[in-house]
Length: 416
Image (cartoon, rainbow, N blue to C red; front, side, top):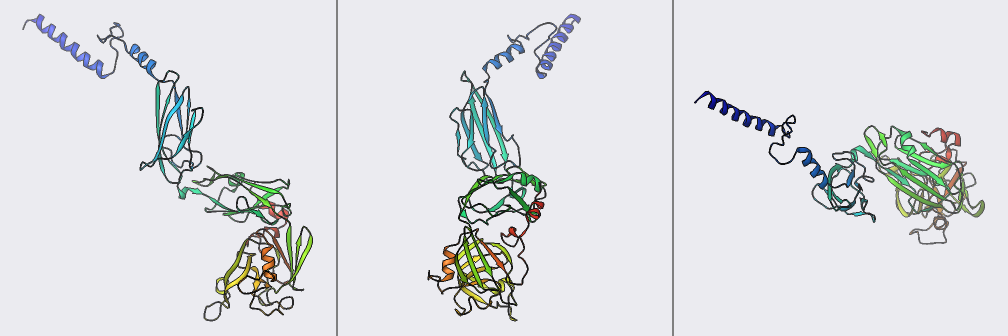
């Protein structure tokens, strides 16, 4: 091979190698020479052509792809700008479809059911712009797990009508360390205009009430805006709910263990006086203001469940059909009907293990008995005030009995 041929061969090989290098670097060619590499269009022209075919619609999915601890209330929202949504599909990780709906203006989408905790969801959204060009967006996220979330069980129920003593009581399933953050997410208001304050009894329970009993006939609203609130390190709220309940007539009953009589008042007027039998000298009834939290037409009362046992460990009493029982404390104090005691007991002798007894009939079917009358004329949240038993005042957190704290003490238990 001559020197000339050798030089031409090297030149061709060099050009080929240069071409490989150019392609591997995604370059548009030799900018200095202005060459288009023989492709018929510069990279700028290619980019411009691609942009002309791209949809202007901008899809946004919340939460971001890959998110953990997502809300079960406010996650899975899809919105679009510069376009309209044409299709949104949401599924769980196993492919189960989640119902949802595109808004009337086709600018947003959201699920029509509440999401589950500790579940992975996938979203695929399609939109088009004014020229009909399609845009697509996909995301996957996992909702907050039970271990990393808290909920509050509250009383009273939504839509209930309750007595003037019924507080709003919330028990959280996880210990709350940032009480202020959680309390900020809870608001209680009333149409009566009464100031309402909340009090923390411990890390799991917060009650809210006004200074005096609720105004009869008023409406109380509880709002839980706890979704995403960090109640403890790494533990977030998931509730977003509004609850309303009504306050009925003002009924407060006064039990006097000394006279062994109970005066039932409505709106400040005595409507009936009922003979009672309170706790015996050995088993005195708590004193103080107690709120009726549960009602049972008949229930079983076993002394062993509240510490009254014989030497054999069995309950000192076990009555399987106590009539017209109404709970006053979580520790087991009731006001209830009594069919096993002599009629002469009521109004004359205190004989119980700490409950307040009213004369009644076995079977709870005689409406003329004092126990039946009181049961029929009582609603949850009514107040029973007990005095002259010789015992201590009931603890404010033993049942719904925060009325036994002064307003100053009550407000001192607020985290705000």
